[in-house]
Amino acid sequence: MKTITKESLAEVEFQLNWKSSYGTHEERLFTTTNLWRDIFPPGFYDQLLGKMPGDRIGPVACGRGETLLPAGPASRITIKRSQFRPGMVEPGYGRFYPLGRLEGVSNVFPQNTRPFRVTGIENGSIEATLKHPLAGYDLTVSALVHDAFIKPYDRGGECAMVMECLSDGPGMQVRANGRPTDFFSEDAFSREDAAADAVFYQNPRFVNHIDDQAITTISDLYGTFVRPGMDVLDLMSSWRSHVPDSADLKSLVGLGMNGAEMAENPRLTDYQVHDLNAAPWLPFDANAFDLVICTVSVEYLTSPIAVFKDVARVLRPGGAFVVTFSNRWFPPKAIKLWKNLHEFERMGLVLEYFLQSEKFTDLQTVSSRGWPRPETDKYYPQFLKSDPVYAVWGSKTAG
Image (tube, rainbow, N blue to C red; front, side):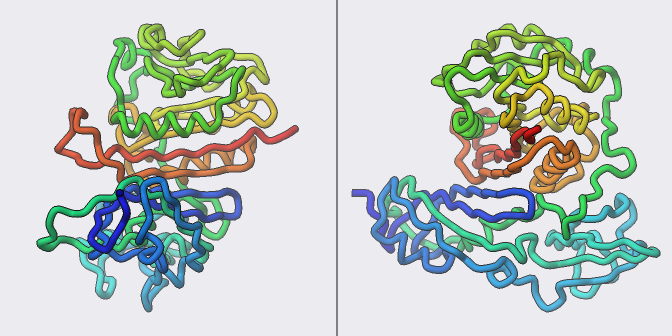
């Protein structure tokens, strides 16, 4: 029997849940834990003992972020603009930057990657906080056991702090003090390749842009939204839609840049070629769809808020818009801002699209990290972890 003991290695999916003033947030981390070495969230070690694959633990309240994840004695600093190292972009309100990019700050070295957040800019001075991004939020942690086995040997190794790994990044996707994050200054939506998108996408690319494990994660997520008889729009579509094979849809319409790719998509019932950057509107009637999905493509939009508003127009009342992405993209066509953001800040950017469109409610985010990369993937063993998946969604506001 695969029962977790003190001598076990266990494959466990931990889940961190929390709420902001305008949404709910879920962080998932798959990890192989060493029961003898690793440090678990409070109370989880004893609860893991005796568990078997399929067993769940929690949710367990872990207190507020600043108690569980202290920032240290100096949680706030004031610096001069000149203390940003040469070549730094102009700081923006609510943005995160590595501490190592500052000069003349006590106990801060260039190699320091700990994030700080800009919380004020005035008269050449910058106020920043070093508090953990989750400080102030009530946190709950749960776990699902996937597998357990006796380790063949134990000759040393790292000690993983599970809560530290689980909370590395979460919190960065929400606004500071309720004020919109300054994502849109300067040339945020410029691109390396400014030529018409129709030229770049004229040749079909029959490749998957994420690995199979990440595709499964996205497919499982979409499966929680689809219902029999739905009309679904696959925005910025390609030769695969990642909708579960079991989904009994009335229609699945693709809107993308390459007709040859969409013609090879076995799930599409119809498709249209349309350049959302040249014409940031959707060629469909109002209230035409129950669900809109956008997979690993949002980083290419140059007029995203206009597109998000029009997505709401074509959605039926209560319909959801689900946006998923990872950390891989076509560099020439991704917007400049996207490349300069922490992965969790990218969720914040997409949340800002939803918020500034003023067309959606019930906003939610999910992150899923740490899964093993399939050995059949072309990047294995160069990268042992699967591509992370980030998702943001909201429901069309009534009225």
